[in-house]
Amino acid sequence: MTDSGAMRRDPAAHLGGQEAPKTRDARWQAGAASPLATARLVLARDLKLAFRKRSQLVQPLAFFAIVTTLFPLGVSPELPRLRPMAAGVVWAAALLSSLLALELLFRDDAQDGTLEQYALSGRSLTWLLAAKTAAHWLLTGLPLALMAPLAAIALGAPGAAVPGILASVAVGTVALSLIGSIGAGLTLGIRRSGALLSLLTLPLEIPVLIFGARATELAIDGAAYGVPLRLLGALAVLGLTLAPLAAAAAVRINLE
Amino acid sequence: MAWTWFHRLASPPHIYRVAGRLMPWLAWPAAVLIVAGLIGGLVLAPPDYQQGDGYRIIYVHAPSAWMSLLVYTTMAVAAAIGLIWRMKVAHAVAASCAPIGASFTFAALVTGSLWGAPMWGTYWQWDPRLTSELILLLLYLGYMGLRSAFDDLQRADRASAVLAIVGVVNVPIIHYSVIWWNSLHQAPSVMRLGKPTMPPSMLFPLLMMLVGFTLFFGALLLVRLRGEVLSRERTASWIREALRP
Amino acid sequence: MSAFLDMGGYAAYVWPSYAVTLTVMILNIVWARRLLQRSRKEAMHRLAIGGTAK
Image (cartoon, rainbow over all chains, first blue to last red; front, side):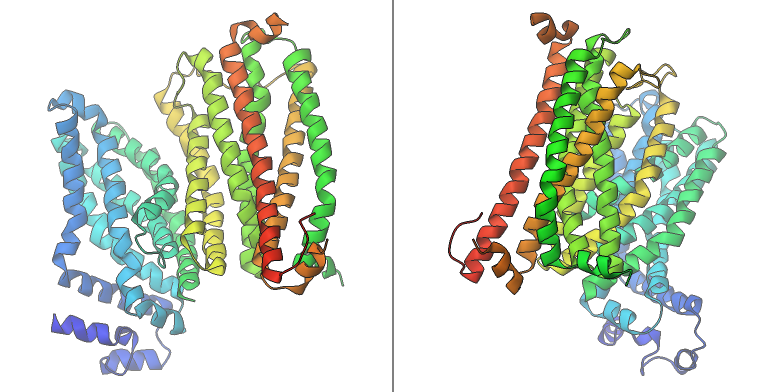
């Protein structure tokens, strides 16, 4: 905890302040740090901070588990009835869990001034935010992709469907994290932004839901799921090229 | 030299004056076209051979749906101009668009549902067009929600501008993904709203309504824009001139 | 006339559609005018100009 405090006191230390280790500092000062190298530092720092608050890390996953549990309890315990809706349930739960973690994506860093330091650092804010979004995906998207097959099996999916579900959720959550970063950037300056954030983000995520649920459904049925998975990949690539730009613009507006 | 019109366009007093003068030139043709379109659509056009008189809903549904997209696009273009050239008037245009667009999207949803009722036997069908309109309505509500969440007008303008641009990139993706989704889950014999070929007696009233609604949007936008410009330019002395009785 | 109002049996769908659309149009006119009028009144109040809005 004390270590975390030190990190907080000089928010941008990991970008190469005076307290930062010599090697990193030197790399920074020399201007040798390419956007990619800077992004890697931000990513490492975000992961390190996240693992200090493990309970916060587990919350979206627990949320995912509880949402998928609500459906058998609300509909029926019979697997033949649950199976046709398994893909939709898993995806709706994944969308909501990813959303839940979004509010925290920029919040702490905005409050302690880290984001401002990023914006003033002269480094490309787009790259830094892309790194933060990557951390968000590693901390929520990837674990969700690992949990989704379990949830689907609990809802009646066969074991053979596991690779397809894993792949579709892993690719789809990339797009979710990216779209979400725009929403999180836009609502940065707003208090109690939860409902607004979901109203902004969820409609934009509908194509991801459609293609993702279709890929998962096909995987559960044992059919070829290559087409929707590729469409999902296309959405992720499109998001990768455009979303960090929009998120950086949004964050800048809210920092001014 | 060539850019003087652009700068004049950006000047609030000029906009206030021009918008006031231009408004009747849009409003009256809009009124004439819409009344003519109503008479043409409700009285003169023959009943459809399949849908009887039920198809006449197209004369209000299609223009409303057209408005929902036209207004969103206008809003996004204005927002982009405002964001790129830091043009206050463009932000005022975007702010004026949202309530107009949301209300016509609502009208398109209700009329689409009423049209579907006798054709489908139910008021709501997850038809791709209706679903897209519903999502569009949510996009409008999100835009208005974001705008009203900020106390600082400049921040509201610029943040909502980013959202409008992101939205307009997404609208076609949402539209085609919804069509794709629908084609998977429904029998191929889906009833299509609207027809590819219409006789001229049916088509002309529809075109009149489409043009009339577009002009009506222009007139509404100009009135709202004047109001926005006035309330945004809080202390400018030109207001004193403009409002002197 | 009654045949016209009946709309070939579709009266219950056609007329509400027209009513909703016309209501939306009229409301838009009212809202837009009210916005302009309110802005004028506020501006006059702010700048302490006498007289009424034209």
